[in-house]
Image 1 (cartoon, rainbow, N blue to C red):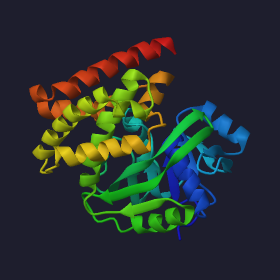
Image 2 (image 1 turned 180 degrees about the vertical axis):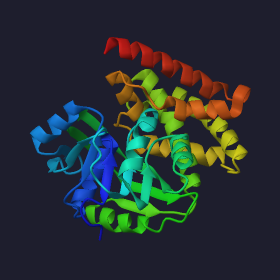
Image 3 (image 1 turned 60 degrees about the vertical axis):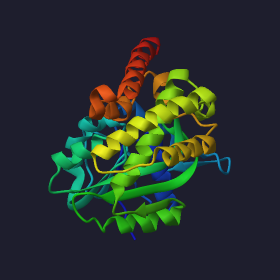
Length: 311
């Protein structure tokens, strides 16, 4: 069993808060969570922790985390769960270097491609793992999150064996999260990339729930996006079947039809999105052959600018 203060979370947003929720349910009583703003820390302290509304039961839970500021690292962490959005990852790497133990494991939990690679390059001596998240959550305020459902995370290391992750399996499963360790984490990254590349920009552009993807026009656009995803994956040695992948993406859209994607949430809040790490990554990989993902990336970048001005 993981002892107290061995698991630290960087980023108290939707993903970080839900992970803290499952850790607490699994028996971890002291969970340091690092925030970028003093306002977030004050709000968490005022409420006695992070308030998580579990939509499955309709009940609210207060997760009694220990809020910390990025500038004041004061923990020694065997596991560091980096749950910030991809654009914010560079700002967290110095913090990681100051709190992770010599034999620690860094778990990167961002969408898209680029964040894991950056961490692996920065910490060649550290066991850097990737976590692919399969749950939906929404941050309503600095200390309040709605957990909409989905209950799994797939994790694994690419550079070094990281059997230490098995300890997280035990505690997360005790808390109700299906946390699995796999050898081929890149395969799951490509599958998740396809889901994000379709659902995120289409919902962000239309400011709609995931169900918009299931419309006739959404399905046609999904076909075009997935065609480019498969071509990019092939460059990296992964042969993905476009028809099967489309069915997979549409199934996810159907199951989560009433959810708002993280990219919609970012646009509405005037925040930077992860578009450069999702569709932008595919466009850069394919160059002139990635016109669909290039176009979607530019449209979402325009939305970022207009949303920021509005907010």
